[in-house]
Image (cartoon, rainbow, N blue to C red; front, side, top):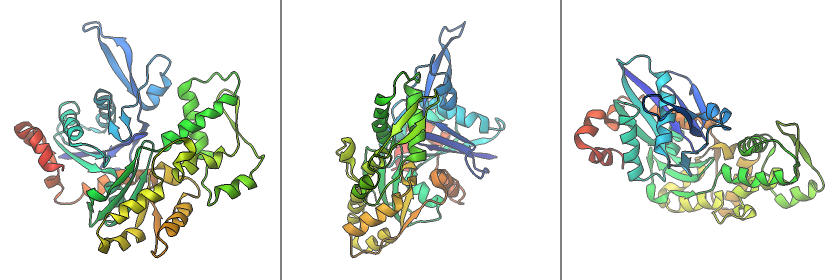
Length: 368
């Protein structure tokens, strides 16, 4: 019996679950560390923690982020995360374990090969599939053609897709994401005296504040005038307060004007326009009328309306239709479920036997 385990590898959050689940049963921050518990026989650390468990042990466990800007940089830590995600989902050892994962469109062939090696040798999968997250998100929304704008914690990608195929030479991306906005908002602590929060508590609190209070406006100058002198307060876990002024709309404005927080990255509307202009002229109208928004940054109040406004300004002769993903941050995971349900899915996977026989060449042939 084939046991399909679906894993969405996000820079900020890892989501995992069985194929027969409606939504991922595991959703944890992509963070981890090694608990220095010595094995009496080997004398080496024996416990890897990740997600909430790692965060709660941060005073004794140095924490690390294994994915940076959409790319895995610490495979040893990802092994522990994948193990923690996959192990509880396996019912017995008799199943054929099929691991179905997402990747960034900026992932390299070298990183794919390392990923396959770890999945087969550390997670002990019997077969493996790796799919681009924006494409999976489109499948998760029952679409096959359009422009996916995926703006998450570590990276923003604008990905043209035609009939279920990514137009690789038209993909645009930026190493700019929600983590950059969070880092900018961390400066608010400069006005807080005697807070007892450590770095990770501060970061988590600002992350929550960002999600609860920040929004995007159509006209930042008018918003500044309207809110002049106004301050919001956000209560911290230690009872102190953050005083938040125009940061509630100025920080996320960086998605449209990155220079506001010192970034030289292109704005999201400009990335989208560049991507569309690089596809065949005959496909461009479908790109403009099938724009799909996924990723945490697209959930800011006012994001969709502002993007519509900016794209209409940049492309005044085009009809522009934008859709927010109905399934939110779960769209890519649900896309893994969709693609793994097709009858010919086994033809898209690489098996352990094939990998053992042909090594890296098998990976190169399957995932181009």
